[in-house]
Image (cartoon, rainbow, N blue to C red; front, side):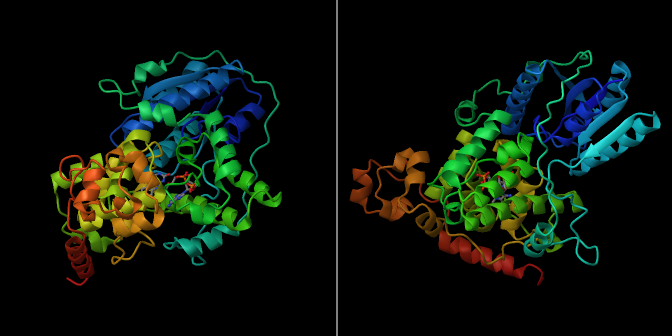
Length: 476
Ligand code: FAD
């Protein structure tokens, strides 16, 4: 009787414990992906849908090379799985675990229902280095601060990536399924995905190439260079991790190997691994706080009077705030589906702190536009910037986009790339065009308010207002 492997955020053949177990069981294989729909399911945003379509297509091609097929179904997994088990006569169902509440609820219900029918059902750890229920304080409590979490987690054993299996692939007769085109995951009316196509190669081969590039060019100087949006010092592995085109175990092992063989410096590897553990921490928070994306982690923020300013929000989304580093970031996001981490922090801070816009509005925009839009990292990071999160930035940390820009993009190279209309400005004023002398603007062909916006708000006034409002939190 066949083994049914349900692939979700683990769209890869290598280091895939559920798939590995199915192949070892020597049962013929049925591989399935479900586009899940239902009232509790947060639909993927536009950029993530684009990634999903391409990633599944790559997975299907990889499987075809082994003589197999990926079956696609759409709807409620609680109905689809049992129906497919009956249809194929499967005797076993395997999947790798996930950690969002809707996913956990579905998986728990399915496991019980399938086992009741005598179907062997097993789930595996694949997406995180540590299961969220295994890293707890001495009193079995949940860590709320990163550093002690990291210390506790780093001391625990991590399995090595699974060795590639040379066993033959045995396939069951593939059941009927949807065609990927039927799911219409790509843009229809306006084709906004050109920049995404030019930037990314979703799938396992693309992930391997990104890791190799990073080991060759990026890891050297990562510890300091990771904060520089004008450099290519970070791995850009985030969307691959999100879809599971690569596992954190594979990445970790490659980095440790580079360190051991002297190809990478320990300081850089350490810093990189700690970033991977921020991802672990976000998932840990999500698992223990299922409504991370909608509810303030810190309840004191529940009464905060956020402001709604549609014009400001729209200018922020379009990269037209008049603050070049923020505009460059928001345009990088729109064009490529990704934004550098330092700029994500500056852009989020402007929206929430100076703009007093509810962090959930920003989280939703990122959810729709990021190829790495992640149910754990996205809300955890937004709450971190807002100050409402676990181990959050303190309320008085209000990034000044001019100073941040001057520090982390000192020559303005990042801005010149994404905000071409001010590219001719000298580095001295490129982060604050409104302070440039008239003749400098003229020479650069800029008319403020026409060819590039004036600043959407006064930074000093907005900072004072934010400090006063955030300081009052918890005192009222
Ligand atoms: P690298 O520096 O190469 O890091 C390697 C990996 O470590 C990343 O791929 C990622 O998985 C993890 N990582 C790195 N930095 C962080 C971090 N600060 N927090 C958690 N994990 C981290 N990351 C997402 O994956 N999805 C999101 O939806 C997301 N939304 C964010 C929203 C805001 C407002 C902010 C400030 C950050 C957000 N991040 C998110 C975290 C971070 O910006 C990205 O993970 C990182 O920029 C990805 O680029 P990289 O792969 O080149 O990172």
